Structure formats: C-alpha cells, structure tokens
Amino acid sequence: MLIRLIYASRAKSLGPMDVKDILESSRRNNTAAGVTGALCLSNGVFLQCLEGDRVVVNALYHRILLDPRHDNPAILDFEEIIHRQFGAWSMGLVSTVADNQALFLKYSTGAQFDPYQMRPQALRAFFTELMGNTRWLA
Image 1 (cartoon, rainbow, N blue to C red):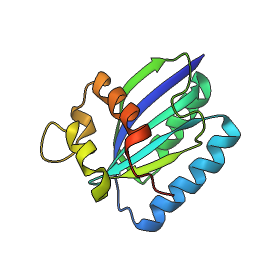
Image 2: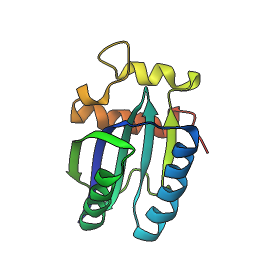
Image 3: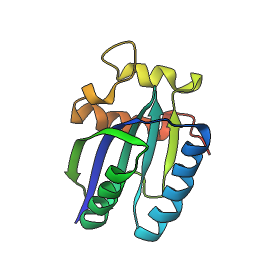
Image 4: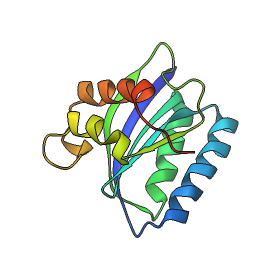
C-alpha cells in the first residue's frame, strides 16, 4: 500500500551542517528504501512529507522519532495514495527564504508559519503548491 505521511517537529539545537547532513542522509537512505518526499524548514520547525510503502514509511518515521534533533513530533496527515506527488525526488528541501515567504504566509494562520495549526487539506494544498512555485535548496 502506497501512503503519504506529513509530520512536523521542532528542531533542537540545529546548525547549518545539521540541515545538510539530514538532507544528504535522507536522499541516500530514501533512494535505497523507495521513499520520496519534501522537507521544509521554517522558524525552527520541520515539516516533512514522506511517500512510499506503508511499512517502510512507518519505520522511517519511528527512526525520526529517535533522532535527538527533533522535538515535539506530531503526525499532521496520513493518507493512502494512488500515486506519488514527489516521485522524482528522494528528498527536496525548501525553506522560508525571501523567494518563498509569500507561499509560506499564504498558508499561515498567523504572522509565523506554523504547520501544527494547519488542517490536513491545507497541508496537502501547501505541498502541491510547493512543487511548482518555490525555490528549492540543493
């Protein structure tokens, strides 16, 4: 069964090299596991979309829970899907750089982007819009 899981967590003592390490290890491990997705980082909050086999994505999420760089993790959306939205990406990264600020604010309930306050439908729309309308980081 193919699923999509979207979760958020607060970053604990995160430096620029930590983000690079997370992205590199995600790309390497996700490719081997058949997981695709996108990672957003905004105001110290991770918002990640993971797609793949239910068992594999579940195991990956449980490894993320054990990562000391994540605090207050919460599953925000979980759904069975017919096809992948991020099929060509082992992991894309987007942040609230100036080029992306308007999109993040479009889905914000307040002045700061807070995915914990978003409804599942808004999260899905946010990731759909991210695909074509943002500046992705390498």
